Amino acid sequence: MLKNQLKNDLLSALKEKNEKKVSILRFVLSRIQKEEIDKQKELTDEETLLILQKIKQELEEAKEAAIKAKREDLKSKTNEELNIILPYLPKPLSDEELKKEIKKIIDQNQNLWQTNPKALIGICIKALKTKAETKRIIETLNSLRE
Image 1 (tube, one colour):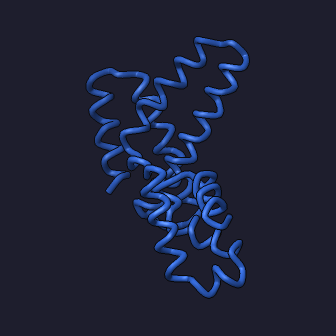
Image 2: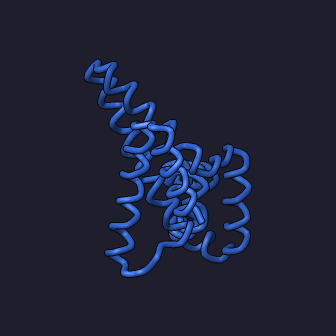
């Protein structure tokens, strides 16, 4: 399980005295634990991935803000944190792979696609949310509709 891998890596980082990695892994594990408390159950790997993706998105937004504010120190700190989290996330689909996946979903839901193409957005996001960003899924779906 992904959560166990995070815990094991946290222990390794503690032994190596890698403070930055310890800090970000503790943060990630605390977010996972909070979600488990809220849901009153242990999270699946997919749910854990969603939390990691949210954290990645937050870090990317913080990086953009640091760039706009011309704060190189914050930008480099955020980059380091992103580099610690990225290995736990699956490699995102390429544009071609994403198109193929969306076309499969369209083929499976042809009637819905012809009557209400916007209804497929939710189906595609639910099926592909761990493989690609929501924004990319919507953009690809809209380009296929045109």
